Image (cartoon, rainbow, N blue to C red; front, side, top):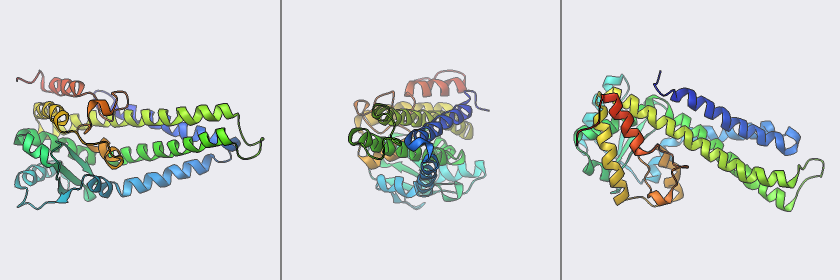
Length: 290
């Protein structure tokens, strides 16, 4: 069991986001459409989960690399995969100087790990090993499924919210079926915000787990702590523009790829770096010596 009960927190957050979706279904049409909204959630979840590797790799314009092209990356990933008793994932490099890394794929047999050119130039081998251990644990913990479900349901709720806003302003349906327009308007504004907040909270709990489990896999939590320090300053120097495709993939990355002013702490998909580093140093029994 994780020290911070992140699995229990994730289950509770998922309960909240599903309750929000079904609550909207109960509000609209007197509850007759509740199963329609549930089915929409399942369908969009399946699509996002099944195609997660393709979508993220395409967003980062990543290309596959052979062992001859990236020997150090291959050596580390093969060592860690063997230690975990899992198959070797496909490896990719993204041609950007923004330092980051992510893992994706619906299971260990269909996994891909991607590093940017920026992170390969920024970190030493020990720090890169810490980062790759973190990323592999996202796959082994089935975090891609978790994040895909959360993102898909939040997207459905946002789309329904837009529909409810249109209905509250312009009307539609019979007076008997249509609830109070002010209630519709309030739901259309608050439901997407609540869904996005829950989605972000789920992502943050999974990051803490990957930090903890990845450090156990590598046996070196201070290496990841050192890498996170470098990534924080590296992203500040070379952030990515928040295009929609990058925003959709950003929750998979080890560090938020955007400038601080492009995303508020409240809605960030990643926990604050200082808190992540403090937890890793606590695992090692003391702070990193600089």
